[in-house]
Every structure is written in C-alpha cells, then in structure tokens.
Image (spheres, rainbow, N blue to C red):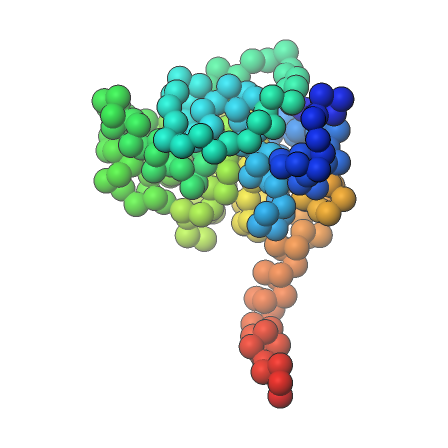
Length: 236
C-alpha cells in the first residue's frame, strides 16, 4: 500500500496529521497476518478503515456487496491510497468494525438476509461475541482478504484463543488478514508482521517489544506490585 504523498492537500489537517499517516510512504503486508497496533488515538483504526474502503468494502463494515451508511464518518484518506495486489485475487472478503457491527446486523435484517453465514440467527439475537465467532466460523472462507478492526472488543480471553485458532485455519486455506488490535493474545500469532503506531510513524516491531505485551507481562508477573504503584496516594 502506498500513500500518494504528492496529492495530499495538507499534512497539518486530519487525517494526514496523524503520525501513522504523516510519515507513511509504503506499507507492505504479510501474506498471512499483519497487525497494526498502537495507543488510542494513534490512527490505527483510521488507517485500517481507509485500507478497507480503498479495497472496496463498506466503511461501516461488511462485504463489497453491502452498500449502506447510517452516518458518513470515515475520513477521505482512502482517496490517497494505492493498493497493489498480487497475482492471486481473493475470492472472498469482509471488513469487520467492532464499533459498527450493530449497524451491519441491522442492515442485514433490513434486506432480509437469511443469516446462514451467522449460524442461522440474526446477530441481534446473539451476544456480540457469539455473533463475531459465528461470522468467523460460517461467513469467512478460504482464499479471503479480511480486515478486522479491534475484533477482541467482543471476545473473552478464551474466545480470543478460539478466534486465533480459526484465523490460523483460514490462513492455511489461503486467506490473508489485516488486523488492528490491542490484544496481546491475537498479536501472538506466529510469524505475523506487526506495525506499531509511534510518534514518528509506523514501525515494524517484534511481539515481545510491543507495549501491549510488556504491560500485560509485567502485570501478570506481579499484579500486587503494579497495583500498589498505580493506586499509591501521590500525596503520601
């Protein structure tokens, strides 16, 4: 993926002012799994949304065949991106946004979907986690290109492990994933490419060097010490 920097109108205005975009030139994706990680507000979801829209997916989520909007809130970043694809074209694809999956479910009900790809039930009759796992199991297939924005938002740790296993099954069937996440469980996927959104832009990083891994590791190693430090009275 390339940002056509010469066409950007103003790097001091949103979304081009975000560090993840301001310093962007070319971003190369892993053929299996690529993670984009970073703090809230670092620009990872904005970037992922732009990638999805540039690939032809609906901005609020869904497949290329789903065309609706409840509120047009996505940035124009996709207009300045060029996505280069390999010789093998994906036969399936989906953009999952945790924050707007409710809107996708409502649109599916509106158009009279039979929900066979969601376990035979509308997502509104399932918990958020159940509907996402149904999506992974029944809707996603081999040779697909799947863009997931914070999928862990709906999942317990055990369900995150189940999702990781399903992702692996789909990778083995020729699928590719681009995922924005805060989950140390998901980003542990073997040999995945991890890009961290930092003040100086996107940088490749190793799993154990991510802040997510380090904070969780330190907390689980000695939760009481971290809690004592975190909750200490500053005036004491």
